[in-house]
Image (cartoon, rainbow, N blue to C red; front, side, top):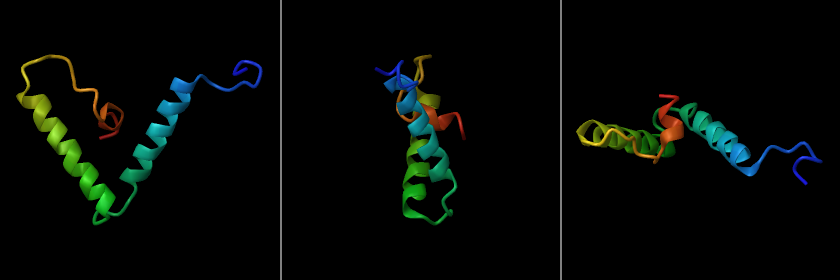
Length: 68
């Protein structure tokens, strides 16, 4: 059905949706509550990546990390 309607597969639609929300969050004003919480979470993830001994990155927030 997706092929007949020229609709991308669900995983691609999901990634595009996540990317668009990520960009939208980054456009919020600096004092916006959601952006503050998001930046705090990103910084926590970065600290975990630096202190972790494994070479594989955490899958959490990986989409947003590419934009920052």
